[in-house]
Image (cartoon, rainbow, N blue to C red; front, top):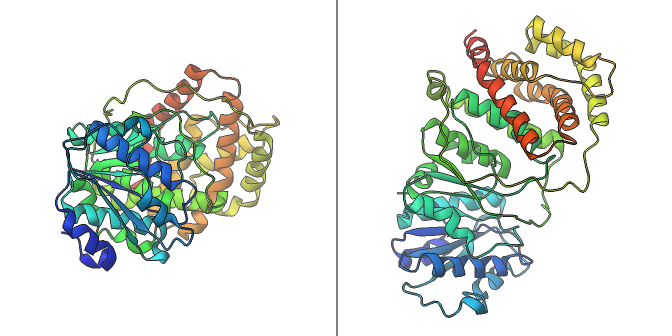
Length: 420
């Protein structure tokens, strides 16, 4: 059972009378008065509509809101007018209590996991408090596959613009997929459904002591599920709208968080993936949603310029991190006369593998090595954006599939460099 100290006294007092539950919905907040009311109503409406016989609770660890978030949450209607006629067969529980402000969003997630452990929840659903269009069927789409044991970890997916999520699609997903010999879900976000057992086992993980960001926590949870060889799937939840993040980091910081966590997970779970035989396994999540139209296409030319200057200026570092042949191929790509470089799938996969292995082998300071990869990533992103600028949905997906296939084909490069 989780250590009580992870839960505030206030939260613990409210949880104990609830007793065991089937579904726990976690909603960590900090000054979300603008969005929280409709979210809570939609969640309770969905639970009443789809899970009338299950024992459910909504748990809100709040990181010191001073805008009335908790008051709005506790006073939000249980259901919109059109759903108020649905009979409630179980008591509706709603818990809100203060959580240590310095622990932020991820501290709230840990408190949700600890609460799930305390109440022996079968399913845990985490909701993003910044969403502004949650519908009452959402919670059923995320919780049902876990409740029926079709999945241990479920990631919601929704339509994306073609230029969104490049760091995930170009680096994180193909790298982790090839390393763990699994096909990964197309989305990794701050929302998910998971088994209560998976949540409870994460409570005492040492990663919490590093105060992970939202983005790095998502990568860590996915990598943990991959290492444990759990059932991972995704669910199409339809279009989503989110309020603007108030704490969004810049590119260098975000890159450092996500790539640093990804490389760190490869280190931590090396024993789990090094001996695996490549194969593809992903529970079906339904048909893919189409791409959304882009209002503001990305201009790849400035990214290409940063790529060229970075390859030139960081030559001494890259000489230490890359093998001679890879470094020479990178310099040749950067020196090409075309406005946007064509950094091929094979060269990009090889570079990522050699960087991951160099970080593992401590060839230089971890942060310096990861930041040296930023301009090369910008070159790859520029190449990718130029190729998909006028592509349709099938062509766009084909490019992503080709990249993942190349990472899988070159997996021996990672193994060889890792063990060098």
